[in-house]
Image: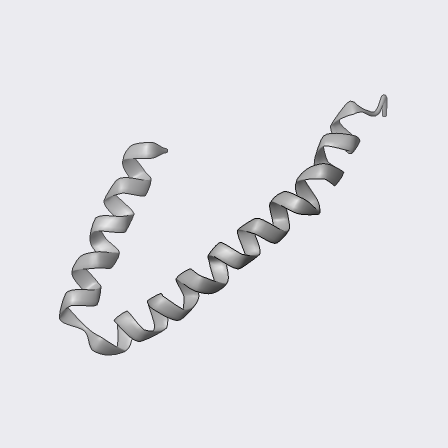
Length: 56
């Protein structure tokens, strides 16, 4: 997973250098993804932890 993430980031950087439209969309998406990740860690992760602890 780490290697795939690293390669994806390299590809996105390469695309950003070549394509201004991609760069703009990706920058906006990256900000949204970072905010969403914080929210997910706060809300959804706690719910997932709770559900995994239940004896279903």
